[in-house]
Image (cartoon, rainbow, N blue to C red):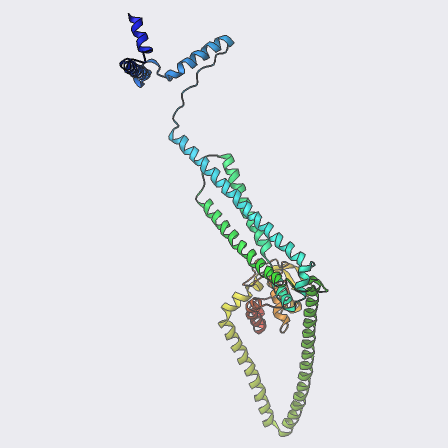
Length: 431
């Protein structure tokens, strides 16, 4: 009877619909009972009571491992439980992560600095190629474009030195930080380090703009030259010719200055001769007229001497009034050093003393315009001078004075010419 009933449930008679529904109901109830039993056996309380260190599903795995170890002769232990890291360990991990991010930032910083150097080298190569290629010849065919190009390239370039300084700052900072974290991986980043990085990043940004400002006008000139015919001469040849013309103009200006000096000297000699003749005649008249006229002459001489004394006092007063400006513009000449300027460059002396007035004259710094200011500005920029004080002057490598150069050097030139003797008397300059 029992098996007959089971068979009817499992394989019901399809003609009996009630039997079919009975079978479905029994199977559903059985499935629910099995799930309840299974879930009860796998509940957390059941697992805690029977397997405190492992999941119930891991028991068979551990049993298999144990059997495998017995078979192979190994004694592999189950993996230990993972402990929760302490606060100090978490802090150390955070510092290591911060160090890693900052090290990556320094690496990018060095790459950007080196990128500036590469970009500057590309600009130099670009200019060098323009000197001889067809694009340069097209520029050379247009006098206006040529003048613009020459004006741009004659500006003193200090970018290479500035970029080198940026690269050195970035690499030194990276090297210092890497060596520090090698010694102490959990050291952490100091408060000053990000500020130094920001300063270098600002320098990189400014230099990147300078490189762009230098390249863009040249590219605009290149673009303007497109479609023009080729010149018979390269841009380099045209620029050399232009420089030769400038040198010729400068030589002519120097020659004219010398001729003007000679004419002034001859005129002064004639005037002095006339004055001497007049004085001799006057002396004769004085001698003829007696003691009274002689006294008049003595009075006149005394007046001249008094006038000279008054002029000297006035000049001294003006010097005292301008002392602050004198110190501002001429202080590099007052600093003691072991070198002195000359017509052939800087020469080393046996003792340390301020710049010599005679040495300045020999070097041409007191010449009249336009040579005097040019020579004085060259002295302030010459690396042969062992004095570290340079004064408020822009970089200058020779050639004609640009407005920025003239504005900086003319006050110094005028003060030096006007107060040269007082500067020696005050021992600010050597004789």
